[in-house]
Length: 340
Image (cartoon, rainbow, N blue to C red):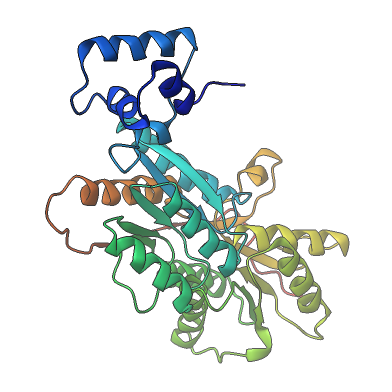
């Protein structure tokens, strides 16, 4: 079993506080005592943990990150951006997955607080739940800054970096209309998420500006999961004289939609057109030409981490900053219209 800081203190005949001062090179310790403690550490092959080093400082050099679904490649790329900036500034990261659950999100916030994090980057599961806002406000009041990444919160005042979801969705649906489609279905995300609300608003805006009546029968409410994309696409394809195109509001739901289309031996865009919100690298690898909205995923992480560093490195209160990034629309042919 590895030696602990208590073992070192006991062997040296000193207090935990004295060992902590040696670990952190802070406070007065007699040279003879310091040399004795360092020798015992060496003899015990002791490697101090980040928590041990934090005993006298009352903090760690650790940043907390909470995302809704770590298996989603979108958040993997966001995390890559966060990690790049964190490593360059000698910060460690504890990554938590809320699994799209507000209860797990709150438990993660409380756990990270117990780990004495310096700051928190979070994509909230819900923009409308006061419970997560209360927990985050408590962190902020303790001097632990919070930065939002592509996830808004009502009744809060945190800095954040976001994608222009409304414009991105508008451009995607507009491209379907320009290709000749008038009957377009949307599979939304969770409607307690502001990003899902904005993507639906962009869909409606594109239809209305092209004098196409919004048909509520073509709006299918998903939850960002593959399963919802699959099940709702099944329903879309069963509609009599139904939509000629589908706009999916997330990459995972796009995968579910394609599974449904393929199982019915249909093809796109010949049988049904499709545009995805978010890039799916696997499609490029296997030669599946799906049109998509390409978001600045890595940049989201980098900018979010830099916003957090600005708060940590400032002696004064930092003004709240909101940064909105543009996406690009990549058309690969799946948006085309084929007359039946």
